[in-house]
Length: 300
View 1 (cartoon, rainbow, N blue to C red):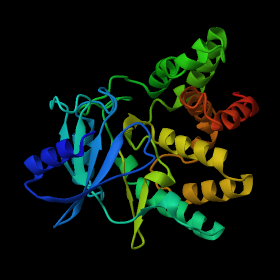
View 2 (view 1 turned 180 degrees about the vertical axis):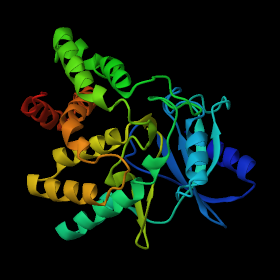
View 3 (view 1 turned 90 degrees about the vertical axis):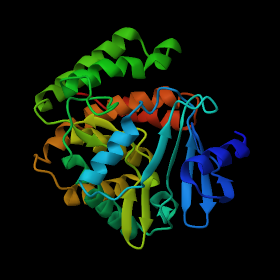
View 4 (view 1 turned 30 degrees about the horizontal axis):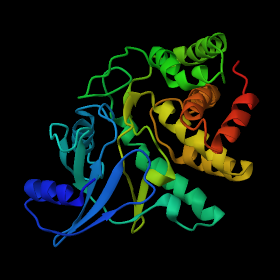
């Protein structure tokens, strides 16, 4: 991306002169830049996909977070009409702090971090939305949680089928088993979930934590957000560290619903997300860990 185009676009919208533009290295999927001005820093993100995040989602999420007094980076521009950026771009506030995955923490400090993450995400999951699935401008399409997860798993594993890593009959059996596990929880409301809840999206500053990067937000059952996080923890942590951090998170997580229900559906959600991740990381070294994990899980 031509920096001069970014500079011109930013200055047209924000009516501020740019002092410097710094690209963030090693950002998957999109191109992200930190823009320095005399008043404050900003984020300029150039999207690599035209249909993700969905049109209208990020402004909707920003409004909901504001309505519920949940700290977040202010969104100034989300535009998919500019022909210079065919997949769209956004301009948002660049908050101070360091993402939690970059902090050097002891085991005890890591446990405390997950307690804080639970306290941060709990009020987000209290924001009830309409239906389940992709948010768009606010109303999701699927009327039950289990049907959304059942139907979208097929799309999430197209690469595995094409490469012969999974047979269509095997996938169908897994889909049915997951649907059976999740159906009893269809009565739980769809809520705003971050969709990529992790240390890399938790910004820490002055003992405060703020969730960032809402591109993957959905309307889902609250347990779906936690399961994606705990799967990634399980793949990257020792068993002891995983158990301590998982328990710390769940002990501090607040919900009006039965938290013990999470134990019943975690494996089913882990299989769903494990297949989704394997499809995405099929040629990445992490794929072997994902395969080993999936072989270890039996859905009952």
